[in-house]
Image (tube, helix red, strand yellow):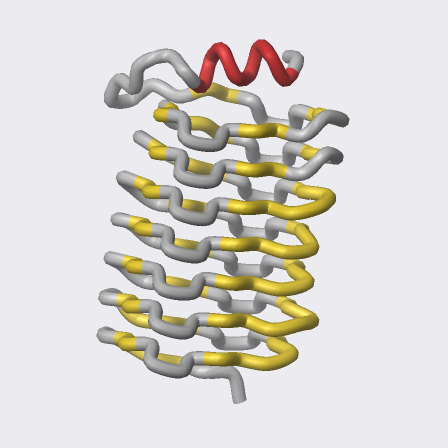
Length: 174
């Protein structure tokens, strides 16, 4: 599957129970989804050598990047997810979720990231960074998390949670 093929599949109307299966896909060009309405996808194990930009995109259905590798930026600024964003084991330099709304779970368990920014976001379920290794800063300034924030076993270079509101269970790195 090429990047153009993937884009064509992702832009098809969302239907409950359907998704694009692109597990293990390797793309050398940037994957740009900015401002698009997208149906569910499984990019588990994918390698995105040109980075991923989905600024302002609207994700319907499952959004899986489990064990994926994104070289370069992974930018979801201003995006909205109707369900979970599952990126367990994701490897990426910078993941940007600023002003993002996730109506389900945000899971970055076991991820290997340079930085994570989720400033001024709304996470309507829990956020887990369990076992994640984030060498730089995690910035949660102004973010609201309704379902709890879990960081058991995580290694985080620095955490900014100024003006963040977190409901539910809370486990900060320690």
